[in-house]
Length: 252
Image (cartoon, rainbow, N blue to C red; front, top):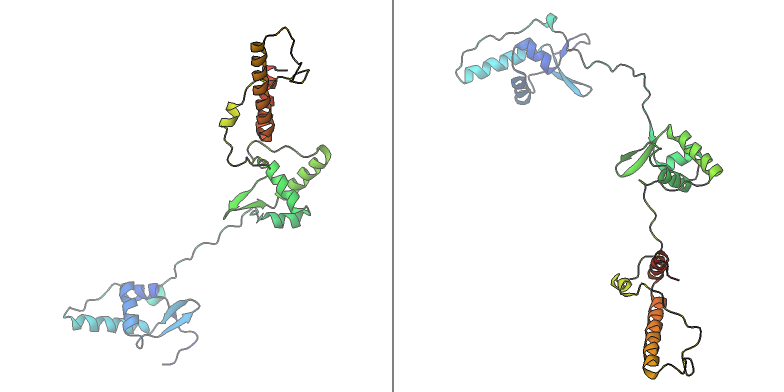
């Protein structure tokens, strides 16, 4: 059979309206009798020649006779009345320009600002710079480039801005030492160790003080010396906390 260029080709939905046969049934006919139906690929879609109308009807009649069912006519339309369904309407041109988002490295190339400085600005002004999270990465719109430049110039004039409350606070560079608990801090006295104008030793006490008072003072001095040694051996964080407590209570 010769096929001319001006012959008509129909897809399976149009062929269903021409033959009056269900589209699913037509699909079965195509799979079971591929040699009797003339088809051609138009891009990603399969279309059937107009001669397939008669072939589909014959295949249907043969199937009905095989199972002993009467052949009945199906409601169908004339090929001249077949109109293609309108496709999806084209989207109206949007008056708004879609935003383009860039990573921090791309924003550094756009603005000409160092990436490390951009990262600091984004941390310090997290609430003022628009951004979005995509796959765990932060992206910034194109119009944020001018805002980055303004904040950079503002920092040059007024100095760096302190980190905002909602942004991450820097972690202390010196972590607490392992094995030391806060219980030792509570065990330390709230009073500062007493100082002596004269060294403890022979002749340091008044001769009028009896031996028992001298022993009591010596024991207090030894306890104070022990606490002072423990204070000097404590970490810097513990010493700072003790000094702060002493300042609050007004100790000398």
